[in-house]
Length: 342
Image (tube, rainbow, N blue to C red; front, top):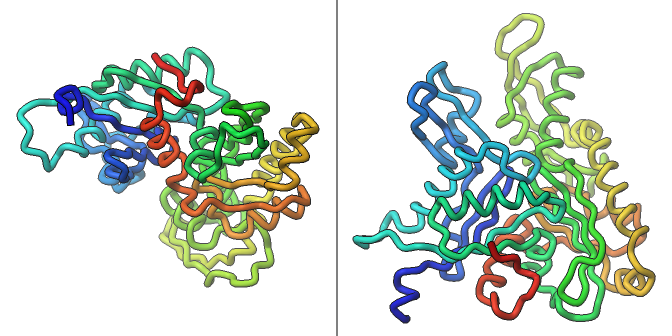
């Protein structure tokens, strides 16, 4: 290891709406919710990541929890910078080093990001210690993480369903040929579940509880071959104001999130319509690849396959596919011309 490498750490960051994942030395070293908790009076950060998530929905008047990213982009610049700094510190918290290294970073961003939003990501990273900051679009990172050779003259369709956005892109020859970006994804599913519980069961549940419902009994179709057990949901009765428990089934949740999934299907349909015919022929052979947390939704691959009449493949590790691809891009900075440097 050279002297330069000793003072500069190479890190890959998947800066997601729901979770932030950091790769360092070929492994995941940070996998935390993208949230910070602050003291309202002083502005001091009191918790980051999982500890802040545990406070979400339970804080008193002197503490607020903030999700700095919304719909895949930075909505609160200061909180995002503090969150990135805090999570980078987690890499070195067991180190006895006397100095703070600078960082060469590759950060993934939504393909539909504006120049202003792109600048916000770069500035936050640089203020958090980034010496050289490169950006990569999420669908490209997902494709690399899945194991696709993105530089080949073969068309591949990637559907990356994250927390804030769903990205649908056709990739060939090291570039994104067509892409569709919609702000319907995991967070929207969570809100759908909250709305359903309020309308159907007269029970008010928080964001964290709705997230657990989605994980435990979330489904894209109402008939599964291996259905999950019914799930007890705790919340506040809207009529009496008392705590209440309601048991829900996966088929109920499938109905609750049906409209949002239909919008993702429409976006995939739009992307296919915009694809050049030669690449359409490739996709007929290769199929559609699903990545992101939304890919874990039960039955989603079958539903999309029925709609498109194409084979649908779920990434081996959909939650980490983008982060893994970002880390591979970091190791091949000189080889990949599609990386954007600040």
